[in-house]
Amino acid sequence: MFGKADKIEVEILADGTIKITTDPISPANHRSADELLEFISNLTGGEMTRTRRPDKKGHLHKHGNHWHSH
Image (tube, rainbow, N blue to C red; front, side, top):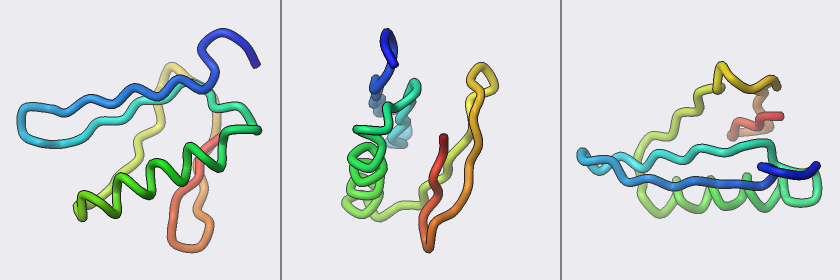
């Protein structure tokens, strides 16, 4: 996958919410990206929600206690 693959954008909103937006993540980096999101969630201690981007195709499912998207 070329172009926008593996791009992760992190934004801190005015209310302190951390917004993380990703483009497609390559299979080679997918696990690392999931681990990064889990790490940030654990450090901040807040609730984490995932929203599928309507402009991207893929699916979302759960592994154990965490969500996983393709």
